[in-house]
Image (cartoon, rainbow, N blue to C red; front, side, top):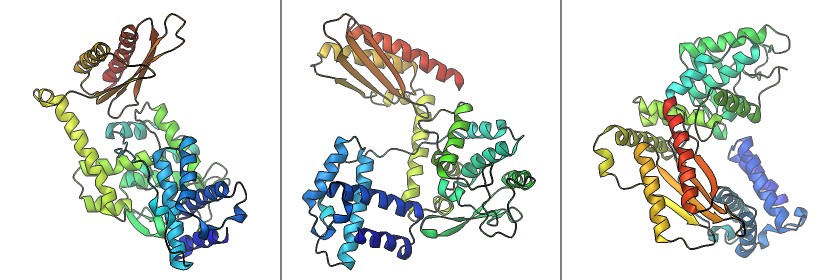
Length: 404
């Protein structure tokens, strides 16, 4: 335990890691220590740990249902910890470096379309302090691209509307200056005026640590509070995306900046990315959108594309070629009507073999900028179940089409 605490102090005081990052390392290492010592972490002997010991913990995480992404993060925490022991405590090799982990899919960032964010901000009520604050939370996240932790840590004195800029304290306590436009400056001043008119929420001008944004009781915001505001507001406005979170607004900021012609290095600076590689992921998003629009708009584009891939899984039985062909033809027919569908997954299983209506089909369709469209039906035959699923999905896709 003493070595873990030394490592955490090293991250905090020597490497200037943020409180949240250090907390994440602590959580990962304490979970491992608890597993390795059967609930007695004070008995941990990190210098005697082997790769085999670590594999047991990694395996247990997989059995508990942890995602490959989560497992990779925890393994990274172990590698960093043992690297510290090699540098400062004479450990000869890093037992975590030999861990073999599952690859994780490279998902593109989820973002919200500009017309949706504009509608959210235009329609947001501003009659009360809470409404002004909640709208300002959305506006700041989308208009500046700051992280949730940066928003909750934003100081009032670091928000200069006369100069049109914010001073943000990012990862590893690195400060950066972000320009803000006249509309956002006015929204900040309107919020400040309402905030300081009530003794419950007013801040002291003499307090250099006073936050810009506070709750109804005058206390600072916290991450879950901001998440709830964003998720509730976007949901109520009918915004469609696979995730509705503060970080999605950050993704939206970056994507819209690049789509409007901003240089990649400028977006990197505004986001506070240390590496340009972190910012380049948004170029893939903009290209993906461009390609999708081309496929929808150009009369010859779809003819040149390969057929959309349909992943069919038959659970505990061997699927026939005839049924496979039936499913592929049905999916292909549906996607000719809705070319925005990017991929399809079909799962088949027999439920309660002794009963009628025991053939279950689950069909899920991936549509850009929408939640996954899913239908689950049971019938006497798989063909009937597939037909019922696709009829339901046809109605779902038609609703999406009519909204646009």
